[in-house]
Image (cartoon, rainbow, N blue to C red; front, top):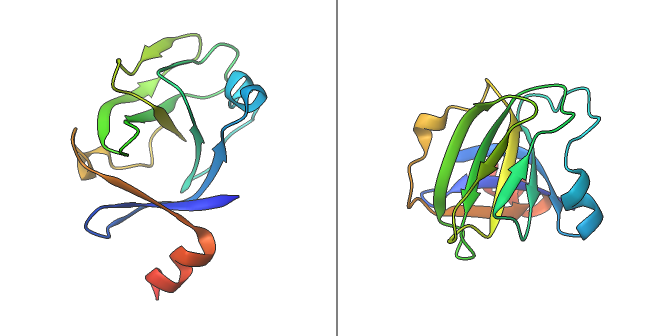
Amino acid sequence: MIYSVFREDGLPLVRDVEWGADSWRRARGLIGAASLGMDHGLVLTPCRAIHTGFMRFALDVIFFSRAERVVRMAARVKPFRVVWGGWPAWGVLEMQSGWFPLARLKEGDKLLFRSRQDASSVER
């Protein structure tokens, strides 16, 4: 299913996000993808750490708690790196580096994940 991500105050953050909750999707992540594209992301849950082994592009990542609060952000994570979100992390939002304005978020901000169908009615 495809979701959109908003900040708690309704500010749109990412338009199209795929939710990857099964073990195969978490293990594979974005390995092999040529790019992800602007305004697209991948959420992996549960997930406290990521690796970018064999990636073709850098990532911006946002780790969040089970309560969907931002617990850590990392920008421009290059291929063949490991990033730890910390013990409070429950999931991670991965995006192709460079387009997402990380200044829109800070640790402690709450993320809202809405299905694209629900998000369409909010955007209008």
